[in-house]
Amino acid sequence: MGAYRELHDRSLEQAQAFWAEAAEALHWDRRWDTVLDDSEPPFYRWFAGGQLNSCYNALDRHVEAGRGAQAAVIHDSPLTGSQCTLSYRELLEHTALFAGALAAKGVTRGDRVIVYMPMVPEAIVAVLACARIGAVHSVVFGGFAANELATRIDDAKPKAIVSASCGIEPNRLVPYKPLLDHAIELASHKPDTCIILQRPQAEAKLLAGRDTDWRDAVGAAQPHDCVIVNATDPLYILYTSGTTGQPKGIVRDNGGHAVALHWSMRNIYGVDPGEVYWAASDIGWVVGHSYIIYAPLLHGNTTILYEGKPVGTPDAGAFWRVAAEHKVACLFTAPTAFRAIRQQDPDGALLGSYDLSPLRTLFLAGERCDPDTLHWAEDKLGIPVIDHWWQTETGWPIAASCIGIEALPVKAGSVSCAAPGWDVLALDDDGRPLEPGQVGAIACKLPLPPGALPELWNARQRFYDAYLNRFPGYYETGDAGYIDADGYIYIMSRTDDIINVAGHRLSTGAIEEVLASHPDVAECAVFGVADELKGQLPVGLLVLKAGAGQNHDDTVAEVVRLVRERIGPVAAFKQASVVARLPKTRSGKILRGTMRKIADGEPYSVPATIEDADVLAEIRQSLVALGYATT
Ligand code: COA
Ligand code: AMP
Image (cartoon, rainbow, N blue to C red; front, side, top):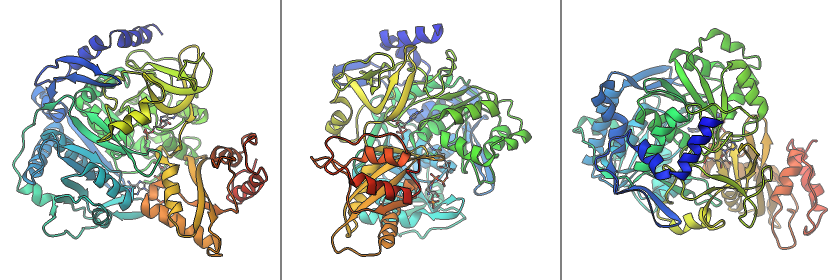
């Protein structure tokens, strides 16, 4: 582990020199005054005093350097049966025009713009156009319902919203416009303007005075030049699940973000400029922000924007077709996608018809990767398969086998070692570092490297409370696990109520809030149970109010519908049961962890503090009826 160790040590011991060197690869309009501003611990800022433009670095810089004709984005959409490629020059032209369209609507530096769009090239154009004029984008995933969008509108207070008439799922069209209209109705803050991309699959009715057709907005616009911003200015806000229904607005700055992401492409993912890189995720998630949009473009790669699924569009060979057709060198997706492919094509028969020789590495992240899936992928693809670990908060991997530096031996079940820049430890409850192999809270020593969140949007105290308060001097990841004697990190579970469904991060607390709002529900508990395909699925148990409706099936159907309406289909909340009581401690704490263990057939001990141990037998019966707790 020589080369990796040496670089990792240097990244911590000489952090400022390390990142200043990495920053040289980008174009700065003004050099930074200090690499790391540590004048206000535990809050840190990278490249303070520096100025740049992220869009310039992702597009103009490459066109000026002669990369204009290279494909920047390949949109491959089995869901619409279409494909298109935009060169760096074309993407720059579209982006500059749309930036002009936003500016004509009064959007200026520092204004927020919500982007609520499906996986179409215009979504990338909208994001980069915001960066171009110094506006702060906030992309909202299309699988969220109006209520979630409204919460984000009220927190980010956007001047403009960019959306599309519809998204396309394999089994249905998703009309975005009614969701958008409803969200704006629900929100207290009202955007001045909405720009709507009309897709031929379902045109939307526009509201005179507020809505503009994308084509009209662009048709009337003049290309806009890059607005120089501070390295420490926010580039975007991305909301992610917290422990309540109020999501956390993760802020990403311009300078540190560009430096870290650019650096990661060669060093972590091992790709060179000009190669094709594919992150099979969605632009609504952090993986999409970082590795569909920014990192590949900052680094001069070709990025694939895939509007399809791993299976069913049309079959479990879809990933192989895309990788072969576009000569993908590096693929990044969630283990769920591979579990889905494996379920439908266990022998990998569909692989046979494709030439995957350009594909050198598969990276997996977003959820725990079970060793079976890892080995299946290794076996079928015959290339290194790297499980790596990160979070919306960190923006890029905390741990990975950085193949551009040195491919570390794979230990299935581990996310490999800390990436350069990250000082990762397992801590006990009192914040003391644990011995190798001992399970504790996984934390990262401050300061975090460039690219990680500097704060939460308009919520510094919440930032402090959620991440910095429990272990002074550390960032608390919210993950529990251990580190072995070789420095390999094992992520085992969350320390909070977050669950991971098909690589999507959900708060069980937020789902409980929805269940509790049903007039018949007195009490409820939601927890994640193990699922072969999606990793985890949420299950709800409801205690009804005295005298509530007698038909429990109706109540269950109603709460399932409520979660879909309020949070969105992505919550995948389909299973609930009515029970007489919930197991609690004498102090009233609901024993969600014990119920999860019962559901998963894991050994559990009856807590000494339980109010009434008999209640667990009834819970078990309900879970058996739902198809769990069978072992
Ligand atoms: N807009 C609207 N609805 C969406 C959506 C979007 N962008 N994305 C998902 N949904 C809906 C789906 O249609 C589905 O609705 P349904 O209940 O009506 O069927 C629901 O949300 C759950 O979606 P999903 O999690 O995609 O499950 P699925 O059963 O449709 O597909 C997989 C299963 C494995 C194919 C899918 O989960 C998958 O591709 N996983 C990869 C995960 C991934 O890339 N994660 C990113 C993190 S790196
Ligand atoms: P998100 O912010 O949506 O990217 O979710 C981040 C969380 O997903 C992490 O805190 C982990 O709990 C989980 N996670 C991400 N990658 C991995 C991985 N490779 N192994 C285990 N858990 C992971």
